[in-house]
Image 1 (cartoon, one colour):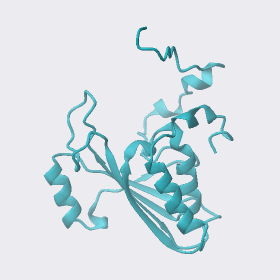
Image 2 (cartoon, helix red, strand yellow):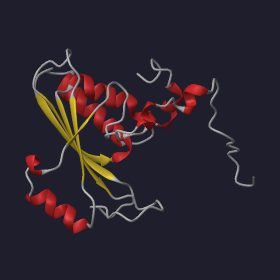
Image 3 (cartoon, one colour):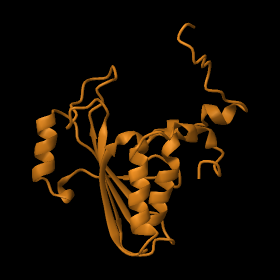
Length: 180
């Protein structure tokens, strides 16, 4: 899907092991029996917005009826305000539940997103007592390779991307040497 969208240059960044679990799980539900099924995974949240993961987002949209994303945050590396992780790691995580009830070749999945913020204990308490219907869900607009997070309603997202304005994009100087 990335090559078809002229974004194949991003495929070089597909190094996360959890992507293999996603592919295996979707294969089990969508290609073997091709019947109803559910996938629920806790993974790093980089696949929600990363351009490299557009192919898996497209595959999920095309093969499932509904997708629920509980973004647990927890980025321990940035300069932004600290958001506790539910695990003792620095990588932000998400719970993603994909449900398939029928052959979904006709329509794309409805994607629903919520974000839990705050202290670790608050997030775990919310997860242990809240029903799915109690969470504040936001429907995510988008198709194909689009991110799995809601975009703001501002006109910013209607502007052309810098990569669309310039005919040539390069990732910059990469000497691959420590002495430079």
